[in-house]
Length: 73
Image (cartoon, rainbow, N blue to C red; front, side, top):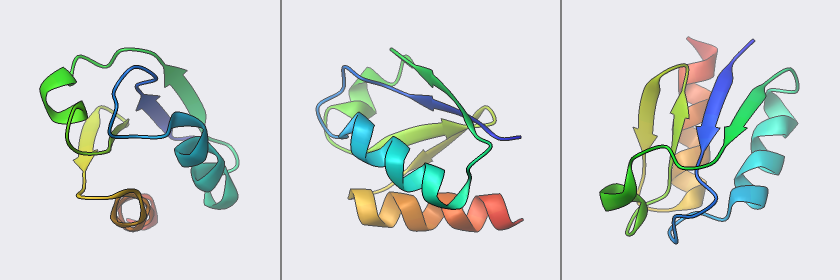
């Protein structure tokens, strides 16, 4: 089971949109929603913390692609 950290305060990510997209391919995932202490990055780029590994991208679509690749490993 994968654990995701998603910030609901950062401006660069739509939390509910990211969570719903992740659930489409990782239905057993658990989510820790709240500050992830990545405020500097979160102002300008979407990110999630996947099993304690930060994943950062330039936009939400790229972020989802990176997450999928990491989950498939």
